[in-house]
Amino acid sequence: MRSKLIDFRDDANVSVAQITAIENICKKVLNNLDMYESVVALRNIRRNMEKLSQQEEEAMQAVWQAGTGFIKDFLDQLNETKPPYTTLASTVKNLERKGFVISEKMGNSYRYTPAINEEEYKKRFMSGFVSDYFKNSYKDLVTFFANEKKISAVELKEIIKLIEKP
Image 1 (cartoon, rainbow, N blue to C red):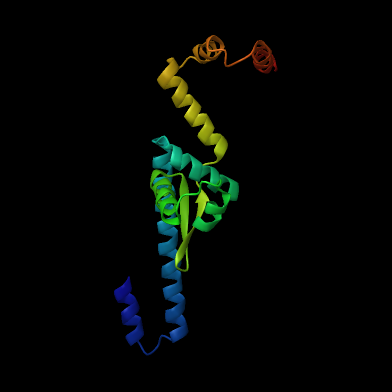
Image 2 (image 1 turned 180 degrees about the vertical axis):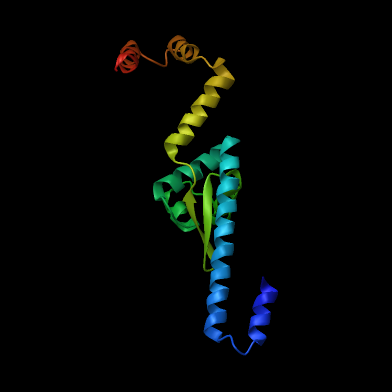
């Protein structure tokens, strides 16, 4: 396609405005193709989503709180034990690689947006947790917490009410 544009430049019947318009259309088509490929890649990543490390979960909490933002915005969301800027930037890049955030280049830096909302992550995490540690049995999960005295009879009654609620 680029060679056609070069040919157009040599054609005396084609104006600079027409060439610019053609170039802009080509850029939009390429950007849309990149966006489509990113969406397809994101869908594939979501299917095989990895568990987050403690550091990644903390960074992801900051991303969810900020919504959309830059590394500095996420740093501002973190508690008093803030990691160095470069450490957080590396962590956020890992989150992007794993499919949890999407980046958009803005000038010399990147703006990040969550690719998965917090509720969806909790559902996936809990499903994996129950599957890995309790043989996919929520009954075994509740029994574990009851035996460990980590859940009270009042809380169990509240859970039963939630389950019985239509």
